[in-house]
Image 1 (cartoon, rainbow, N blue to C red):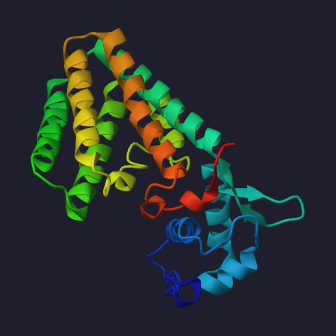
Image 2 (cartoon, rainbow, N blue to C red):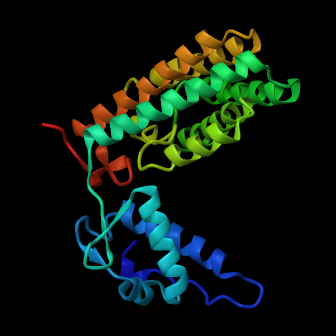
Length: 257
């Protein structure tokens, strides 16, 4: 999609707040950044985005600030913003940080105990993933279904600790570019080992749920730290050029020397 063909966001009416317009602008700008429509390093001004999206300056200003907080943009000393370039190390560390936080969350969930309803929801989610992975071959639709269910399971894990502090920090880290649990899953789609890797990840899902149910905190934490290593492996494969085009925004990552 070319930036010039973007449909302007409707001007807010009395029923739609400026906050809602800012969220829509934020989502549209993120899409443009990851699609490479806003080149990295190039100065971005509020006025230029206003003209592209047909939105007033107030929600655009808020959207740019939020994308800076997410880490996709950096504020320039002379005003405006620029799309950031990330090192492979930056992304790897963000993934590791997620694994550390999810490990802590899993350990606390096991130690504190989780209500039966939440455990049943997690169990049902994993059974749905099992159904997806039971297919002999996975098409794009199956991968997208996996991504949705995988995100749901990780969200449930994040809730199990019952900690608003950890939940808040997890939300921040998964919003870092490329650090979400499914950040590199689609990159695997054309790999001959794709289904095998997802089966390994799914086995870890079942293991951590079992550890939480059995109140084995150290085991639960260790499994989630190990689980993040799959995403770091996928990152390495992307940076080696294995079908990088399937991973939105990969052009923003600079390969390590």
